[in-house]
Each structure stands twice: as structure tokens, then as C-alpha cells.
Amino acid sequence: MSDKKRLRGRLIALGVTLAVLAPLGYLWATSLVPNDYSAAEMGYADYGGGPMSGGHSGGHAHHGRTSVADLTGPKTGTPDVDVTLTARKTKYQLASGETVDGYTLNGTSPGPLIRAKLGDLVQVTLVNDNVPDGATLHWHGIDVPNAEDGVAGVTQDSVPIGGKHVYRFMADQAGTYWYHSHQVSSEQVRGGLFGTIVIAPEQPGEVIAAIHTYDGKRTINGRTGTQQVEMAAGTTAWVRVINTDNAILRVGLIGTPYKVVAVDGRDVNGPTPVTAAFPLAAGARVDLEAVVPANGLRLVAGAATVSLGIGANPPTGELPLETVDLLSYGTPTALSFDPAKADRNFEYRIGRRPGFLDGVPGLWWTINGHKFPDVPMYMVAEGDVVRMKISNTSGQAHPMHLHGHHAVVLSRNGVAATGSRWWVDTLEVGNDETYEIAFLADNPGLWMDHCHNLPHASEGLMTHLMYEGVSTPYRIGGPSHNEPE
Image: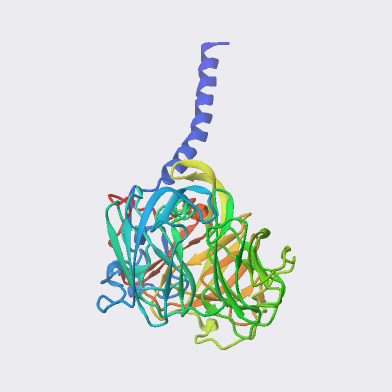
């Protein structure tokens, strides 16, 4: 072969190599996430067909006069509930005796139950004893003022070792909730940095059941296996179930029909007795009510091997295959706003495609066809009626959690809701499912809207709802090493 032919061959090979590597290099470079950036400046503004700030196009309307740091709860007044929680990274024993290498609050996981009555002023001081990545507390499902929301790099800086942070908010929404760290949350929540909060007086027959999986061991209130609660026959049991894991869980009572009386801290109107299982999304809560029969009843969390007996001689067994469908359960009531006259109409299309995320190759989640951080920033103004269509073609289910708001489900796969108003803060969107939801933009701030399968959030399935005229002084990454996930 002549030298000219060899040279030509090498040039062709070089050209082919460059043709392949140059686009890959571009995709790699454009996927890099800055080490220090503001959540208010990420992605691109989506106004949902509503007016843009000042009536002009381009950019995010985040250079306003209202800082997230100023959107606090009451700054004065003696708290009715005053709790200090100390976070530690440590080895500890579950209530059932197994050893876990993870995180505790005041030496236990789950952390202490916080109990408040409607109208109470709640003050919680988080102290970080030795959690190396820092920590925060997010009040999952409680629509607190934005500065109290506990999201590192968005509403506060993560609390470093030796530091503390004080949260203050009014307990103005009765119901079942939980709290957890929103700093490196895929690791810290899995490792035990969470607890429960109930806004309601303690009542006879109340049972709280926080379900969590530690190192592959599913527990109820930190206990593996089966357990027992004494309760007299004829007592009305009110069972508050919290799913703190990353996947949907079938729960329910066996031994007697029960009612679904509240979901995500909102009452169900006209509940009727059922024997079916309830599909509880990751992060969601459900309140179940039943009169304890002579032989008792049993809460089952997925499988009969993880259960909580209530009363004398509670039955054993698995949950039925049928599930409660909140789309048609209960009796409808009027809404205080009209979704048909929405000021903003958004789409939240969840997909997945190969590529790079922060320089790492893989199969990554997308929102409206975009990978994080080039995702839509949903822009609203206070008082807007907001309508959102959430669709999922990603191949996996996603429990979608919007901070600071509760939304009402309007339809699923084009079928309109006909039951009680189905209010959610965490909505399971299965693969190939489409939901329409609506809510009132009545809580100004910068709010995360993400998958509560927390590893999915860390893999880019998160964005924000942003009120025009709001800014944040906090930054993701940076000196505080904020990682909100």
C-alpha cells in the first residue's frame, strides 16, 4: 500500500473518530452541573400560558424584592410545642433489636413523635451533632411558609456539625405528616433521619404506624415482624399509616371492613367501608378507621410478615388483591376555585433517555424531554389557579411530591374523578399513566417538585415551582455543600 493511501486511510479514521467523539464531548460538557449555583436560575422558565413578569419575555422572574429567607413563620410568640432534635450519624439498635449503621434523632429512628393541636405554634430546633454532610428538616405534607420548608440550598443552608437551625410554623392543618432531612436525602432518609408529626389531639384508639425499610428489613415503628397493640373490642381504631420508603406499598386492615378517612392530611368526604388494600405512595400517608371486633384486627404493611395486631387475638393473613381507587371513592364536594379557568396550564412529562448527567454516562430521567439541570421552572404568581398534566412514559412509576401545596386530582388517563375530592401532596404516577391535577398558588416561595423515590431525585427527577418576584440567597453546592435532592 502506498504512503498516500495509508495517509488517506488514517485521515478517514481520524475524521470518523472526531465525528463520533466531538458530539459526545459536547454532550458531556453541556451535562456538567455547576459546583455552585442558584436553584432560582436553573433550567428555563415555563409560564404555562400565563403572563410573564412585567409583561416581557426571557429569563426567570427571580430578581424580586421578596427573599425566601423573609417568608418565615411567626418570629415572635411563645411556642405551644417546643422540641429540640439532635441528629447523629451512628450505629444504633432498632426497637426490635437489629443493628443499623445510619442516622438517629435524639438517639432513635424513627425520631420522636411531634404532637401538636390545631392552632399551636410549633418550634423545632435541629442540632447537628456529627452528621458530616449536614442536615435539615423538611415537614413533608405540611404547607409551611417557604423559609421553614427545610430544603438545603433552596430555603436554607444545611446545618453543619455543631450548628443548629430553628423552625417555627403554625399548626393550621390537622392531619398525619412526617419530617425528614432534605440534605443528601436519598442516603439520610434511608438511614433513618426521619420522624412523625401529628396535628391533632391524642385520642383513644389512635395508632401511629411509620413504615420504613432499614438495610432490607421492613419495619413498623422501627420493629420488624409482627407486633401487638392492646385495644378493647368496640373501640374505634384510628390508624395513621406513613410510608417513608421509596416505593408504593399496599397497606390495609384485615379482620373487619374499614374506612379511608384521610389521605395526605386531608379528610375524605363520605368514606364507605372497604376490605380492599390501599396503595400508599412513597412519602404519602393514609388514615384508616375501623371498630375493633371481638377478635381484633390487623394492619398489614405489604405482607403478613410485617404487621401490627390491634385488639385481642387479631387475625392473620394477606391483604386482598383488590385495591381502593380514590378516583371514585367517597362523595364529591365543591372546590373553592375553578380548574376550568386556570391561569397557568403546565405539562410535566416524565421520560428517560441515554446520555450524560454531570459528566456521567447512563440512562437518565427527563422532564419535558430535558435532563437536569436544563428542566422547566414552573412560574406562577400568587393567587393563580394552576392546572398541571403529569404524564409518565419512563418505564417506572414515580411518587411525585410538590412542596408547599396540596393539589386536587381531576382525572387519571382521561377519566374524571367522581369521588371525594382527592387531595394529595404525593401522587403515585405509574408508567404510561397521565394525571391532571389543580391547585391554588397561595403560598409564595421557591418550591421543589420532585420524585419521592429519593434516588430518582438524586438522578435528576426534580424541578421547582417558583413564584414571580421571589429570590433565594441560598445556593446548591458552594461553601455549605448543599445537596437538596
